[in-house]
Image 1 (tube, rainbow, N blue to C red):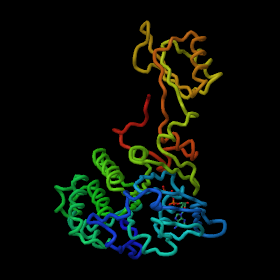
Image 2: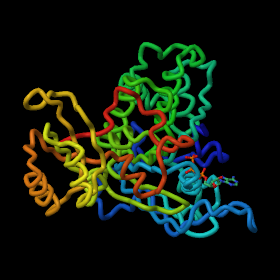
Image 3: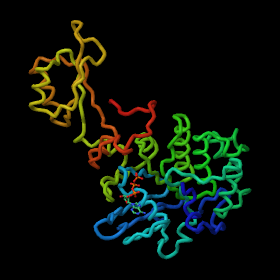
Length: 379
Ligand SMILES: Nc1ncnc2c1ncn2[C@@H]1O[C@H](COP(=O)(O)OP(=O)(O)OP(=O)(O)O)[C@@H](O)[C@H]1O
């Protein structure tokens, strides 16, 4: 992880602390009227091609994106979609061929040092915490190189350690921690200097269920209570759904969707109805297939049906009027419905629809979802 992006680039991380309070937050932060303050990040028409000629790759293709202060935006996309390149363009690590990047209103092209004074990042699953230093020493170190007096942010560090459940390990050298704990220290180090905008690439990778929950909770709190703006890239749909206000999906270097999780999931076109009945047999299923988009048939879904027969569940894409047509068709076929409910699609399905990518292949999506996390909902 290029943990501190600004410093990895050669250090435009110094800041004018006269503008900031003791916790390292900007005076014109989340309390300022929304319309008077520029967004945390404004990317306009950014393109980036690697190489030249036939072998060249258009990694980012005319992408525009605005991230409001205090929001958490998830960046999703299959391998090679251009997420990392876009983040690196936003961080000034990669120079775009076209377009502009403004960070808190400052054009990166005009003044990189000023633009990146309040920005930090954790990239590509690596980390560069100092393993010989203790957890607390790492936080102090990264606060210092972010231009902040570590004593002035002691309370912030205590809070971070507490919230990330690292207090008991505060004086332990990082090298002696488990992988998951190191990951949490890495995040704490990114947040130690009080950046206002952070880019987090796969922040929950390698964490167990409980640690992942702790980290998500802390990210939500930081955005809600401290106005931290977070751009989070992950293949883990559970993390994106749980944490992000908004999801930007990329494929082939372009943005293919940009909306709230709720809006992406509630696309009526995708509504699927699950009907359970002991009367559903092959004949009924064949009849339904003639008129409807039958997505799944599940024999014997658990509960024994009437007359001791096993019930069958069919899932049919049926939104709006099609739902009434489905009910009529079932009645005509002599089916007495035992249970009917809407099955909301999972974010992963929406993702597959929009990007044309199958999940599970070459680490596309859901690779590190833990078994304890729900994959779908019924309502
Ligand atoms: N430095 C580079 N030189 C050449 N090609 C590159 C370079 N960096 C990225 N690419 C190519 O650009 C495309 C986008 O890559 P990028 O890493 O941005 O995708 P990604 O969405 O972050 O993928 P992943 O989920 O695998 O991290 C890919 O085809 C990749 O091979």
